[in-house]
Length: 249
Image (tube, rainbow, N blue to C red; front, side, top):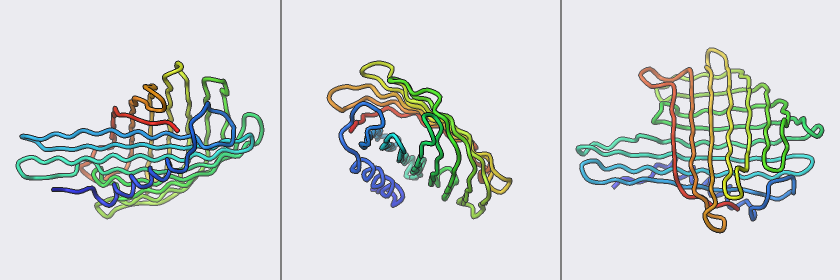
């Protein structure tokens, strides 16, 4: 019987720490309190084909009139067994954080970092550090929309022993929309153009959460990742669509 890899175990632990650090969920706003949510999904099959998939996401944020701290993480793990041969189909862990400091009502300066591993997709590890400026285009009661950009440094290592490091730029946008009293939509799009050694990276993360009862939600998520530099024989684009249950704090 196979067990979860140490990488996945660490990823799940990281998500748990994020959730443990949050307080009760309330309406969004710069109230100085922690808000967060966690979602888990999975699928298991047996018979001619034995497979299992586990996905998990967590995020937390704390905003005041002066600054904001954001944390996020996700795990995607999958195993497949056919004719006695077992392979790992997904082994991804991503985690990141960002600190925003308001320069005025709309403009802010930020600094942050992200770490990722996805050995099934050829990525042993990647670390990105960024800093720059952002602008809050929409600050409504039900909708927020920010754009941001800056410069950074990335270091990537692939499973075939190759890798690279170098300067990168960052262009991004993110929004949250309260579609109804029960449903919230979030999305975040980032583009990291880099030097020849590091390549270009683009990521899209989107999620739809519908309240069921109390803090429980039905969650649908979409994650798309494009990397221009990957080991030979692997695809440059990976996508993941998930459906699961979540809980807001």
